[in-house]
Length: 68
Image (cartoon, one colour):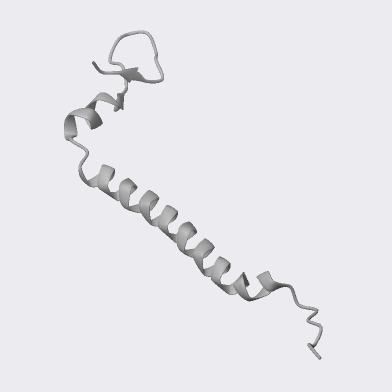
């Protein structure tokens, strides 16, 4: 007589799916972090100078001016 199994067949795959999911999440975040560090390290000073703000030295008051 064959015993009746109450557990589903996919129940044994739960730990495998969890590990694969954690691997994919870690891979996504590591790509995000590594690309962010890469862009920070390889940024050139010309692009940084374009985005700096300086106070205007004219007579009328201004909050910030973009130097071009």
